Image (cartoon, rainbow, N blue to C red):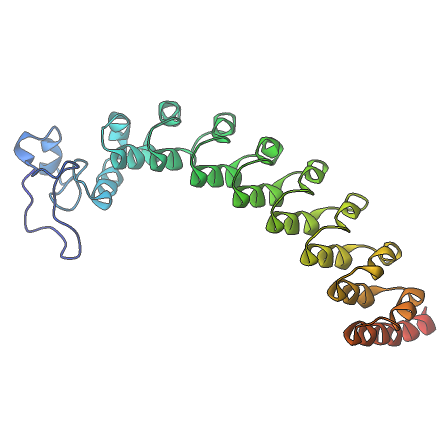
Length: 261
């Protein structure tokens, strides 16, 4: 397909995926040119530029099945968007991650679950977004922290305690924001201050006694925000001024509550 002046100025030269010139006269799709269903340097399945490949399949989605085994990964990837779903099984283990990334957008749940251990992080991220929550248990030990973070956001609550000891702080923050009592109590002694602060914000006042002795003043400050009267009075003796101030403010709010209770 000889590239013509139709090429858009902002786009790269029109060559095939090997960098060779294109010749419409010997193209398998030359009949489409006369029908206006392809256009040199603008919409061509044999072009190296992904946008031109995409335009071709937007104009000719019914041809996508014919290009799922094309040697150029961009063609396989773009074709997978329009191909019949049952034909995508052959691309699940494609050697190129871009292809698998596109396939993961369309696979039914049963097949999508097979990509939970894909070697590419981006593919597993897409799987973690799309996979039914009931099937996410197999991803709680994923080697990538961001994948585990996504899993923690969607995992059913009965399975979430498994992630309370995740090695990554960001993952445990998600867990702390979702766990319910009594499972949440396991994070009271988390090594990260921010995780313990999250726990203190979510625990009921009656379970905050232990956290009032937390070594981090930020955690004790959180405790003071919702402490019972007895606990708030004990925090008036805290070594940190911010905690003592918060305890005084809490007591001031408790008095009107007591009068109107």
